[in-house]
Amino acid sequence: MYTIVVEAGFSATHRVRYADGTAEEPHGHTWRVRAFFSRSHLDDVGMVIDFGKAQAALHSAVNELENTDLNAHPALRGANPTAEVVAKYLFDRVFTAGVSTLRRVEVTEAPGCVAIFDRSNGVGENASE
Image (cartoon, rainbow, N blue to C red; front, top):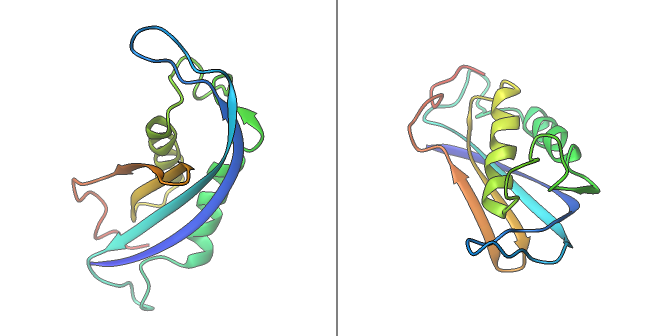
C-alpha cells in the first residue's frame, strides 16, 4: 500500500459534554490535522494523489473551522465536538470533495492527545485519481 500524508492546523474553541451531563468550560486549542491518502498501486504518473490536490482539499476543510467555536459551527451544532467528532467531520469534508484516496484523518487536540477516523472498508483504494 502506498500512502502520502499532508498536514494542516487551525485554532478553535469547544466545550465537551460528559456522559453525566456536565460540561467543560469553553477552551481553545491549536488543533493539528494529518490526512493520509492511500492506494494499492500508483497512478499513471507514479502518485497516490498530487500533494497539491491533497493539501488543497485538507486546507479547505480545516479553514472552515479556523477561529470558530466548534459548538456553534453550523455543521457541528448539536454534536459533542470531541476530537473524534472533529476527525470524522474533516474526513467527510475531504472525502466528499472528491478525494477518494483519503484513508485516515488524525486530529491532535493537545500534545499527546490524538483522535483518529480511519476508513477501513477498502472503498476507493483503487480509485483512478
